[in-house]
Length: 201
Image 1 (cartoon, rainbow, N blue to C red):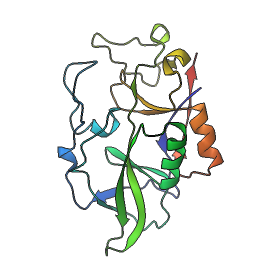
Image 2 (cartoon, one colour; image 1 turned 135 degrees about the vertical axis):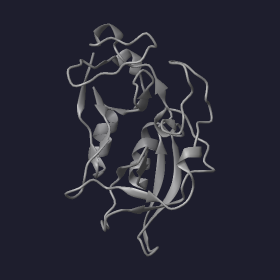
Image 3 (tube, rainbow, N blue to C red; image 1 turned 120 degrees about the vertical axis):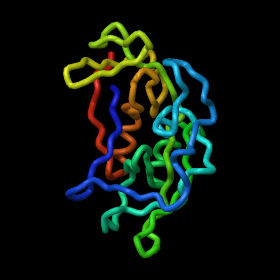
Image 4 (cartoon, helix red, strand yellow; image 1 turned 90 degrees about the vertical axis):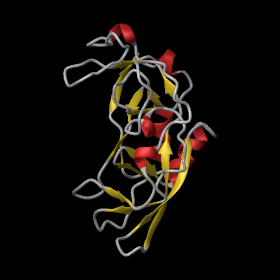
């Protein structure tokens, strides 16, 4: 089966971060070639495009906008995502050396250290949808928009042996994971993950 990887709040509200250095608007993918669509990915898509990013402009320090002291193992940070070493270890055990993990420090408003985490960049960019079963179908540019009344179906054959990926046909960069990742994440006791199940044939 296929699962969509979301964050899950540890308290009453989701965790948000301010970036204390770097410049996310200058972050871009190492490979900017076009496979589906027209224009190469810009900074709003780079961290969820399924390809490695250039790291010189990635923030090295981020600050939670709440006083939450316990960090989840996975969290959304604006148009990107951060993870813990435990999360990285689960991914690396399944797909060693495939994905990109860049250190980032979480600090309080006064500068005190909270946690060492990583920018997490999924680096499998795949075509995994069961195209003949999608409702609505892909558009003339090859993209799939989905929606509340849609039928989104993945193909086991197209997923193959992959465990964490971005599907290139989605207009927005969602992160998808396998049964094996789901089981390993639960076994490792990872917190802050919400993984709704998706139809797979």
